[in-house]
Amino acid sequence: MLKTLRKSRVGGGSYMSLQWIVVVLIGFLFSINFLYAEPVEAELSEEDANLSIPVNELKTLQSLLVVKTNLSKEIKLLGKELAKTVAPSEKQIIDKQLESLGQELAEINLNFEQIATDLHSAAEFQDTNKKFNLKEDLGSLVEPIVQEMKHLTSPIREKNRFRDEITISVQQMLNALAAKENLKKLLEHEKDKNLKAELTSLERKWKRRYRQAESRNNLAQAQLDMLEAAEANTTFLQSSKDYFREFFQKRGLYLLLGFGSFLGVLLTSKLIYKYIIRHLPGMEGVDRSFRQRLIDLVYRSLTIALSIMAPMMVFYAFGDWLLFSLGLLILIGLAWGLKYTVPKMWHQALLLLNIGAVREGERVFLDGLPWRVKSLNVYSELDNPISGLRIRIPIESLVDEVSRPIAKGEPWFPCKKSDWVILSDGVRGKVVGISQEMIELVERGGAKVNYQMQDFLSSNPRNLSTSFRLKEIIGISYDLQAECTGEVLEKLSAYLEEQIRHEGYDKSLLNLRVEFEQANASSLDIVIIADFKGDLADIYNRMRRNIRRWSVDACTKYDWEIPFTQLTLHQK
Image (cartoon, rainbow, N blue to C red; front, side, top):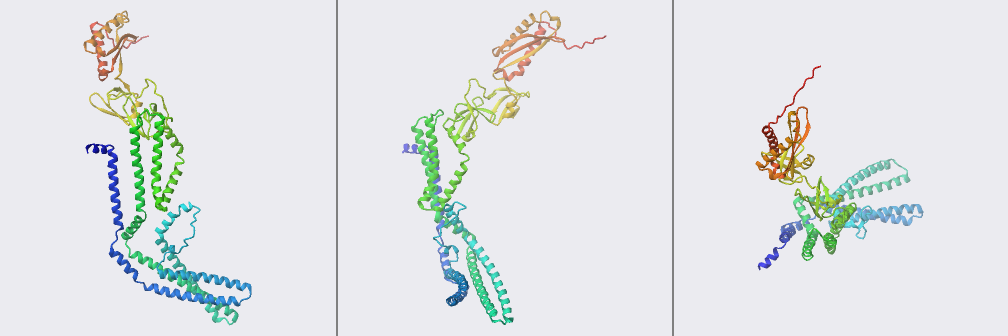
């Protein structure tokens, strides 16, 4: 049992991720179940509401029936008149009138059926055999998305359409009334029978137009009232709940399965990758061969492709063309965007295969610092061997960089932690902190000084912890001119060596030279050059003062005069 538990804990991150996925899926299913649940009382109330037929609908149906009857009579009269007519021009006129009246009658029949069946949505009466044609967009691929958007916005569009029809029909009724009044006046004063017959025909025509406009107005008003009544009986919260319930009933399960297939492919791929690493030695090493890098790159590419294809295959298998079209459009958009990044992706692939411009184990200059390429991967690792800095950067950051082989003895950084440095501004301190952004120094006495990385490098730091040189000059009197290049130098050198040995600095002394510097205006200058190891870097200034002190003590011991600067006046 313990062995089983131990095995199950290998890759504990994957196990914990799987637990969270299961919890999320269970919660998601409960939410769907909640959305599916509907109160019985609500269903009964809706059924009771549907049983009550508004009185306005009956009135509208009666007015439409009257219009239908009148149109049918006019069509019959025109048909008889057409049979009696001999002239071709008159037949053509009557045919056009019959065609117009037939279209009006068909529209009235459709309106009558809409009111009677309570199917007021125009989408219910569209020709189902009509092919969708959207040449300006993506044709049939966009059709499911457009249809879904039409379905979602159909109540708003229907209300606007009915309002527009009401406005137009009211204006047509006003125009028809004005025409009827004008024709009535003309008929009252006209005596010619032929003209009066023509005016009478026009009057009947405008009366018919008025009735048609009135019927359209009544129909649009009734349909608008029905929509507004339906919206008034439904709260925003209820409509939102109905929308989400309808969405999950139709596509929630498909989305859940698509997301599950995506996660399943990723988890399966991760487990297979661990198995490959375990059974193919060197797959995770720094010095991987080209074959191993190629296997890794191909496997990652297949993982990405399969994880994208898995949800699409789920949508295709269940026949949900809306989700499938959305996914396909997203993929097309991504592919269209990626066409500009193909060259960069190609360079990234070369880098992952270690055959690009940047290669493992070489030196690359990045952000003002030299770095050693430790490993190339999706997230590559770089380090600076002297400063101890390490960074992890995405592979695309190295696409525009170039590395070169590392030469022996190349400088990487001016110092490392615990080194003593002197900067060009005179600050001397011990390096206690190095980061990619800041350098922290501690001066003698404990004061801390911080520099930004580029400011620190531009200050030309001098590292004292390897070794350092002190150079001091002391002047002696011209009375010692005969001995200043021989005996004085030997005695001073011996005295300094004795003092260095006496105070315990001899083990750190690398070199000591005492030489004649120059004949100055008031003195003969002697230079003392002393090289010390880096272990005395923390007392750099003390050693400078010691050399000065020992030089003065030697002058005192051997009675050498130390002159001062003199001012000479010349009188003419």
